[in-house]
Image (cartoon, rainbow, N blue to C red; front, side, top):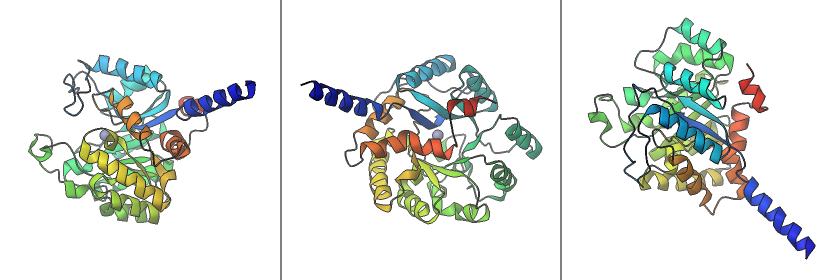
Length: 302
Ligand SMILES: [Zn+2]
């Protein structure tokens, strides 16, 4: 009887330890000026906090709830600095804009630790890809200093090209095959495809099978609507078959809906074709290796 109880306790330990730690490689941060929340998400009605400060606090609560050890954030420099100061678990990323910063300034920010990830690169929304010459000097610096590059692949929200921000957006620009030259030109660059290619998920898997150092995150595919959730399932099945699951990372891409963290973890957990070990790799181990996190003190100690 006693042995049976110990066995049960061990089983319970295995179950709970599967997601005892998580690294989220895809989050967005805001200031009160650029925050656009306050309305529930159209799919599934996930609530959105009323303002940027509440959004930050709620995000932290979800990080505590799910034991998220680190989260890569991107947004304006001001919002990134604010969040990085608010909690040491945030890894500062640098989102690109139409006009990129002065290259000396960029290198300085890399050197002093203000930028630890270059991304989310929103090139697709600006009518270009990472292969555009405008990114070349920045990629050279990222390669030199080992800064991971986080590149948006796939589509965007409905009616994107008609929005004021993004008349040049095209889904076709989100095809991972279009940035193959970047991988060839910068062989030591650490790069991950955000959204794993989305509608081009087969291209994502093929790129990973050919370029054995290329990583992806599944981000918004885990929750934002039924079409992309279907891509997530098919992508993960194909990635498993191709033997590249050890380079797939979890990201919530919760944007202004922190509850998407829970929703996305639950959706991943519901995939019965993945083993517990594979889920743990996606939720934690792969990102830990990719971001070269030795221990918590490693990233936050400088
Ligand atoms: Zn994103």
